[in-house]
Length: 366
Image (cartoon, rainbow, N blue to C red; front, top):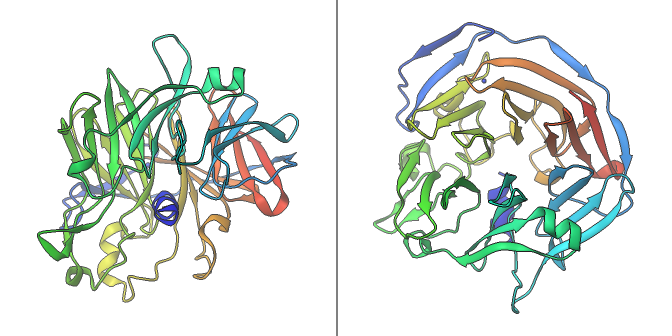
């Protein structure tokens, strides 16, 4: 289950665009081909020395950074003080005892609860529990404080647990269900999709589908992870951004209207390129990590194909593509150091990138 968790987890008008009706049946939205590429902007990073091991997806909160990764042995979350480079505290103890969970997803979103405290929604993968991690109280007490934790009421309806979860407010949850073989036909696969649930119901209020279900032979026994993406939600919780790992395309979902659009980088075909790839089981990584603020979508982008035998978590790049929430490609950032994952401090206009080889985190001013 650890490998399932990590594999699933790891897994944009300033310019004129050309929109046309999508003729590739797998993708349900409209494709927009971006015509022009903006000039690059160079960013010089400040090195922050970290004195303890760290890995995985980071989430910055003021002067602290949370890391979640299955490799963490005793706790799911490690919190590092960026001023000292040392551990502040560890949270969500692993195990099978009371108040213990074998693996928890990162919290991909920070919101305020009814008391004005910062919290982050997460999933306990093995137990299929949904929880709200109270960030402020946990930092203050150096103990795990959860606003709530409960068994998914909807878990019997889906083969796999949700890997991305977002709070929509008013007891509404948005969760990503991963692709899996459908029981009605062993050669047919469901596609990844988002479902909106109430915490009080086991029936989804709404489904957001970007892709059709597909058969193995339709894409020559395609890799099951080909449609996966790195995802983030707008701070107002009305739009969702998805950067596809292995396709040169980002997708934006309007959670109110249900409208789905795909935005393809200049010179590429996006989802349509799947028709032209001979070996769909060996696809190069294109987008690895995403982070957003109120105005922009930031995506860690690979301009060159990584080595096919490289470990996913160690793959690094110095290019971040920036899109607005209408899908316009507005900026290309060139960092002074390669990074593996990154997170944004939108209030201070800072970007933090991890580099485990240097045992450091690099801070860039946006």
